[in-house]
Amino acid sequence: MALVRASSTAIDALMSGETVHAAILPFLGDGGKGLPESLALVQEEAQLIAEILDYITTVSATEVRKVFSQTRVEAHLAEALCAGGAAGDSGDERRMLEALRSAADAGSVWAPLWLGDFEHVDPVGGAARRRGWYNEAFRKGHPQALERLPAVAP
Image (cartoon, rainbow, N blue to C red; front, side, top):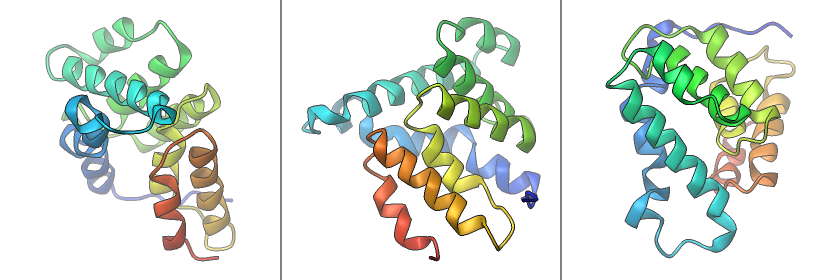
């Protein structure tokens, strides 16, 4: 399957620090109060993403990669956010998608959700592939995955 390239402007908008922060906000601090305990991993990873975003605004991408290298998930999420343009630079779609795939393989609950949102493949297999990412996000416990499934054509 050939990947259809979105414009770098679209990728920059999707992975901007503001957009990512808005996506994780319901799972942070008081926003996460009252959520079921089953969402602990989603909340924990949202907090990690918020920390990466905080660092991205104050230090270089190289430093972000050094700081967030303790686990495979955090290293790949840091790379995805840096490559996706969260630091305000122009995004690198190929590197971002590669890092998100690696984060998903390492157990991230947010990466497969975002892959379902970002990965636009050829019309023949695209919907099935996106459904697969959303299903993986759901299996890992992300509550927003089921909300996205109806938008993907069967």
